[in-house]
Image (cartoon, rainbow, N blue to C red; front, side, top):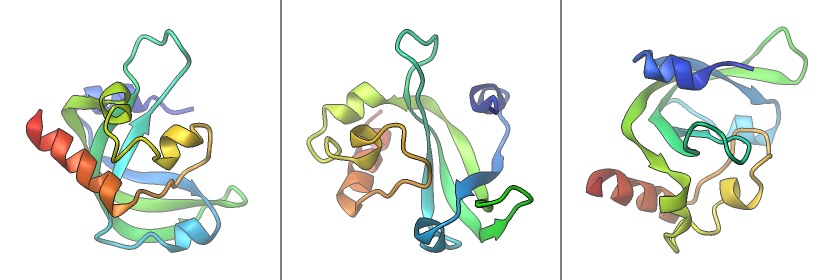
Length: 125
């Protein structure tokens, strides 16, 4: 496990991320937008939701771990973060894969409508 919350709280940029090998990783390309979704157990001391946003900077490449890839990113923390509860109440985001299958490995896919909902919430906050 990696302390993504501590990393972002310290103002650090996320420059890479581990993803599962497979067709979804093949869909990732430099310039694609991406978001870091933080979740956790009920009663956690943090708020689940989107904690960071940015872009893919490099295609996924193999790591030493079998079936794992590392994708290059330029992702920065959001201030304030975008809470899961706010997105869940938006009908454009209510069927998002991250809400329907919260324990699924990453990367998860967002529709254009779901990204539009995120953008609207980020600009209205």
